[in-house]
Image (spheres, rainbow, N blue to C red):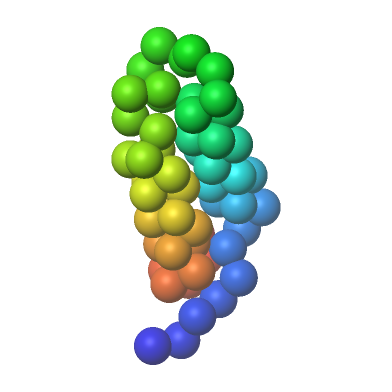
Length: 56
């Protein structure tokens, strides 16, 4: 398996999801707060796919 660096867009999307997950733990964000764990997992999945898939 060859890994490649994710594009800037994929990295920024992953970063935004991770920040929303952390904020959801400390503040009341309607959809994020009850699903903060899954939002954090989604951030890492997006980052993983950006590393595994070439050109993404």
